[in-house]
Image 1: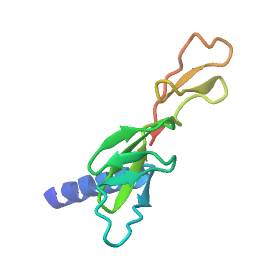
Image 2: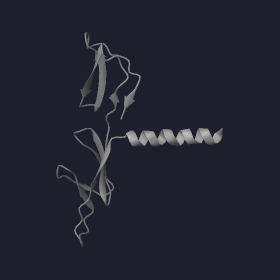
Image 3: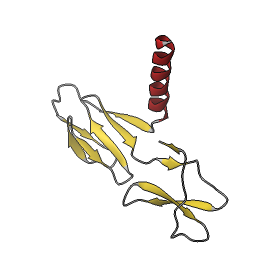
Image 4: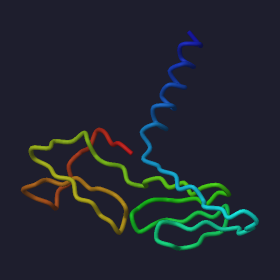
Length: 114
């Protein structure tokens, strides 16, 4: 029984990690260059081992060999799509779900994906 439970926990962690919306940007290194920074897609430089948040609601980390960026946004999927709508709030990097007829009222959400 413990083996089954342990397997389910490992599977759940694996599925969660696979659903994360992340990407990697390899660092372009010139032989002999000892630069201790990364350059992001906008041309901004970041020190090795630093973290930052982009304007596109991603958190990025500069490593020696790459930049890793992951979305901070969870998308609502379990809600009444006939009577409710999702609205993205970029300033908070999140969606809210409100009634179509009365956007002042929020709708309940039963499932989110990353």
